[in-house]
Image 1: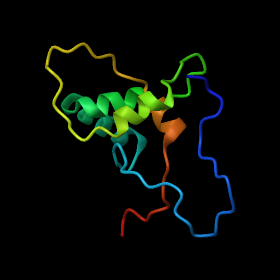
Image 2 (image 1 turned 90 degrees about the vertical axis):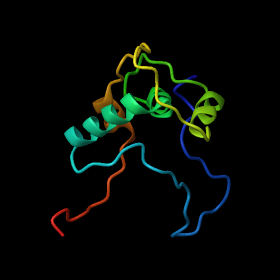
Image 3 (image 1 turned 45 degrees about the vertical axis):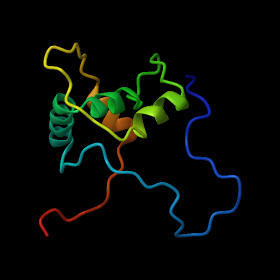
Image 4 (image 1 turned 120 degrees about the vertical axis):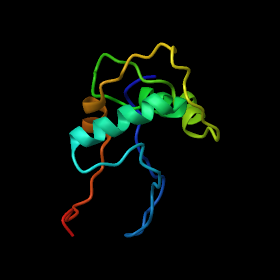
Length: 111
């Protein structure tokens, strides 16, 4: 897939307060280091998590992302299974994925 033309586009007016995108996070944590640890744990136990991480931009300008149809097939999959222990797996650039895709809320974690 090309790097152009991806994103959220609307074809008409959007009212303030409208929900444009809702999705479950691939992981949650209080810091980038904790988030990478959570993503590593998810990747060890979930084939779907591995596929999801492979479909997320990591900021590498030379990396070609999958076509939207391929990404949708991964994200819309209803089942999941643990990958075989001997399955080959190259860990993605988790910090790059976080930098390119992370949304955060301003939260008082001490509260």
